[in-house]
Image (cartoon, rainbow, N blue to C red; front, side, top):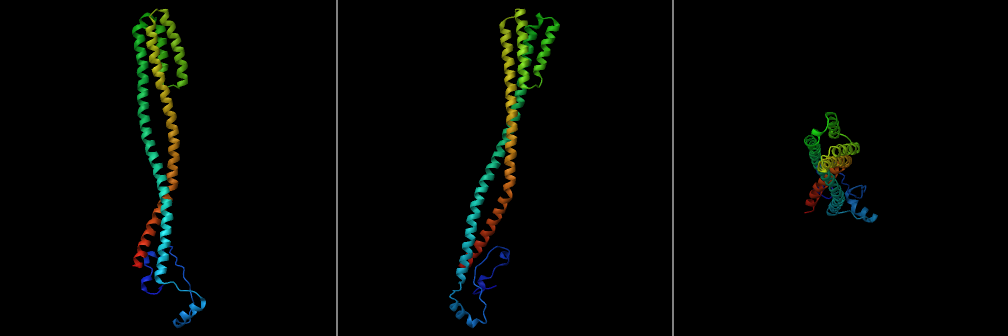
Length: 240
């Protein structure tokens, strides 16, 4: 289709675009009556320059709208991706911290065993000493923090009776209590980290879902922007 002259021919790569140029379609008997018919109708035929300007303006308007939406969506997705990255780092740090705490917890109970074997067990009968060691073994096991506290209370009460009974001295009791409390604190921190991991996993799942949901629109907008940029560049060159 030609308007005015060959400069306004639509190139093949634009044939599938949504460019729509509003124009007046006039049925004519022959070219000699065009001017008269238009004047009688009170309608002015758009010039080639005006038609091109309209197309250029339309592409600019679409670009403004698409770029605004793209920038907002791009910022949103970038934030989600940054949060997901930070979550991965946090999970790694949590996993490392958990290993440290597990090791510390075992070390503290091992120190308790060493103290009692050296200063108390030689004064106890084998059955009583074995019973205390069995209680420590239970404490060292992977148990819930609430259950651990009950075992600690029972263990320390029994140990206090044995220490005072054998007149070993309060120093041993205080040293043992301090190490047991450190082991207990390690287990409490382990519990907190485990709970934080669960929450982090839930939050991360939600963010990944948002990323997946918004990616198609993000890709579509990027494609539309590129298409309109190319079309705008083409039509602006036609004005020169």
